[in-house]
Length: 441
Image (tube, rainbow, N blue to C red):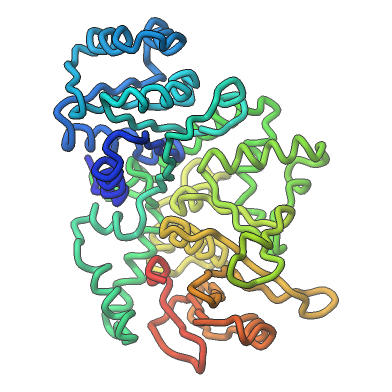
C-alpha cells in the first residue's frame, strides 16, 4: 500500500523552485519508505524516470560513474539498460541506496551542471566514513531526512483525515476534549504500539493482529542488526542499539556506553556513536549546558540520551527477550492497563513526535541535592523564549522540576508544558496537555 507522506510536498517544492539547479538527497533508516515515496513521486510528477537501485545494479551500470567525460554515453547507456526514454527537463533519474555507489553521488556535481534531468538520491547510513572517504560531497546536493510516519500520517493511513486537524483547533482554542479524550488516548497508544514503519502499518491494516505486526517489526530490527554487524563486526554497535530501552529505564540522566560495551578507546566510542546517529534508526537528545535560545551553541556532546526513531520498534525492543511480544501485552498497553512504569516509552514517543516535527532534541538537568537531580525532559526554542517540557506516563499533574526550572530562569521561559495522559487543563502557569498534542507544539 502506498501511504500519503508529507515529504512528498517538500519534493514538489524542490522540483518547482530549483528546476534542476540542485539534486535532493533523502536519507533515513532502512524500511522507512524512501524508495516507495520517490517512485510514487517520479510516476506522478515526471514524463519518465529511471530508478537505479544500487543494491541490484549490475557492475556495468556502476562502472558508468567511474568516467564522466562523456555524459551522452552515460545517458544513452542508462536508457538502453532500463528501457526508458529520457526527455530533457521532463525526466528524473533516481539513485536509490546511493551509499552503495559513492561515485554516483560524487557525479551529482557534473550531472546537475549538465542540466538535462532532475536527480533524487536516497540512502541509509549515508555519511558512514567508508561511504564518503574517497569522494567529494557535492555542494549541489540538498539533504532532507525522512522519518517514520508521524501521528498524522498514521491517522491518514487508517482513513482518518480529520482528527489531527480537530486537535489543532482544540489546542488553539485551549479547550478540553471531554468525552473524546479517552478515544484520542487510545488512538495515540495504538500509534505507540504499531509505530510508523510503513510495513508495520500495512501489516496492521491487513491483519489487525498485533502478533503479526510485532513479527514485522522484529524483521526490521534484525535488518538493523545485520547493518550494524557490517559496520562493526565486534558487535558493539548492535549492543549499543539494543541497550537503548534499558538505559532509558535507568533514569540516569544520560546514556552511558561503558555500561553496555565496557571500556573502549575514546576514538572508537565516538566512531560507534556517530555510526548509530548516522543510521537514522535513533534520535540523540543532547544536554544543553545553558538553556536559552540558540541551544545548539551550548550543546554538551558528552551528555546525551538516545531514543529509537520509531516508538513501535522501541516497544518491540523492550520485550526483545520474549519469542514474540504476546498479544496480551499489546492489548494491555492499548487499554493502558499494563502494570509497568511506561514513562520511558512515553518519553520515546514524545522524542519521536518532536523530531518528526522538525525540532532538535535537548534536555537539561540540575542538582536537587547531593544525590538527585531535577530534569527537564525536553527544551524547545520558540522565538526569544524557551519552552520546557516534562513528560509523565500517568495522569498526575505534579511538575516540581518544571516549577523549580522556571524559578531558576524566569526571564527565559515562554510556555511551560506538562505532557501527560489526562485531558487539557491549566494548572497555574503550567499548561497540562495530553501527549497526543506533542507534534502540534
